Image 1 (cartoon, rainbow, N blue to C red):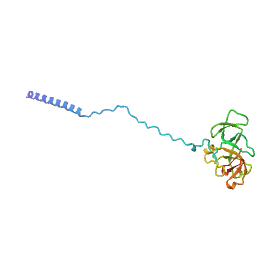
Image 2 (cartoon, helix red, strand yellow):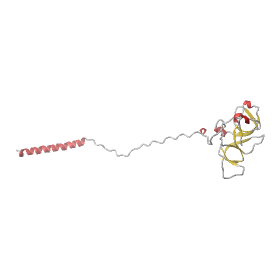
Image 3 (cartoon, helix red, strand yellow):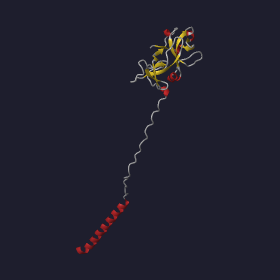
Image 4 (cartoon, one colour):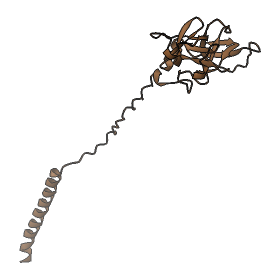
Length: 200
């Protein structure tokens, strides 16, 4: 009896074994394969920020603080000669520059503000805007040669103070102060707001 059932049991075992192998093969074919992405990373680098635009020349004052005539406080007016009592001369805005070389015992080295040229001269003056008490005959004044309707007018910005010429002269008539100007040697009419006086 036992010998007759052994082949049947063996046949069933083999069938189950074949079925298990087939199931594994099917399962392997149906499981999706995940492919690893091993390509190099692509890094996006943002462009550098745009630089801030440079300030325009009108926004800059290259030599520090200035007064109401847009004349730098540390600036001098320089000339080629001195002023006589009945004469006028052109003067230029400049900064004094220290130099290890001395041209002579009286001359100083200056840098012109309008073009950067170096000038040696012994004629130089510090100045300030004129006050009402300065408006009298004989006062030495400096003014901008910028024409208005009736008289020379003051600069309205730093560039104007460099673009126009400056004149040193002497007040010779104050009868028109009520009209807003005085007359200086030349003669020329100069607005009260355009006058500077020498302080050194």
